[in-house]
Length: 277
Image (tube, rainbow, N blue to C red):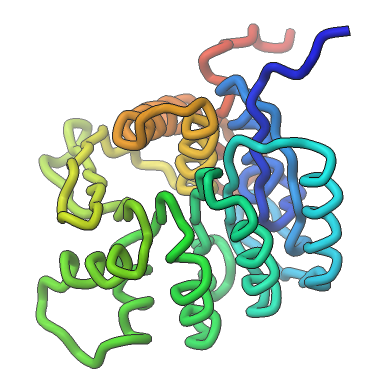
């Protein structure tokens, strides 16, 4: 019998029957990057490759019990917190991860596939900002999501508030903020899109990749899951962000069409299985 050697990563998120996003997608990315995934469901989706039709919230006590039982039995190397369904869930998860301050926490709380993207409720946004963001090693969000969250602490603002909005989050204790879609250049097949990483001192680096037409479902979830796995392997944060982006670009470039909707990132593209005859 061999003792466990693969890093363990615990993810909190919704259960997606397609496996394109949420905890099923996270587990696939963890496995592809040499980690074993543990999962805590926060909700159940009714979804296909085109859309999410509905979501069922799981009781916060169930969320807590799922996590506590696992954590009492095993030692995890990283946490990922994905889409949450209620403030009570956010509070419960924040309390759980606070018991493990030395374990990297990747926070990716907004899911564009949800009907409201998780951005409609001001109280939920404030809860995430106040109790989860300060514990995050890396927070991932788009410019739109950042601007929407910023509405909970400021009124109005100029045309270029990106740096100031990020500073608000890093001043609260968040280690790094990765803002996606911060720039595009070129057009057509040669177009690139950029993501920018910030820490408390400002811009750490800007990472560009080829823009792919898609449309995709689960691209952001793929990146945050990859980052959690790479952080679990005790990599440098900046290097892990760059590697996670490269992995995501490969997963999107090899995306598969399972149904009549959007393309699903191929988490196992590096293994290139032979087509079924």
